[in-house]
Image (tube, rainbow, N blue to C red; front, side, top):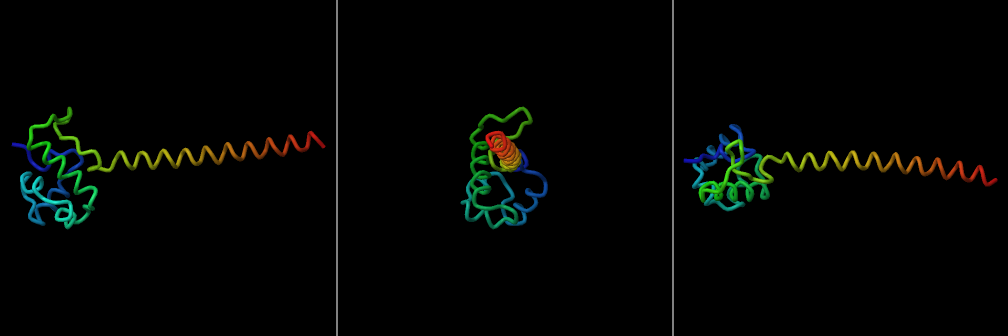
Amino acid sequence: MPEIIDIKGVGPVLVSACEACGFDSLEKLAGATAGELSAVPGVGEAKAASLIAAAQALLDGASADAGGKANGAAVGGMKAKKVKKDKGKKKKKDKKSKNKSKKKDKKNKKKKT
């Protein structure tokens, strides 16, 4: 039978926090509301909704990935962090290209005069 730890992105710390708040089984987690589950330290409304959906999918016998954990898209937050990191890199590239454009503009002005 699947357990809370089988949800992708859920580790022992989150399992302990869930258990401390009364969510000691996958069934209780799947039957909770996002508001109830957000009482768990470190779990907001969005993460709670993702955990609930992943728990329901495990109980319904949904397919698990190669690691044996059900996909809970935003549970681990890893994808979100990666996207933010990429955006930061893109901004830096944009600034560099703007600086290059400014330098070219200055050179063109000097050539015209």
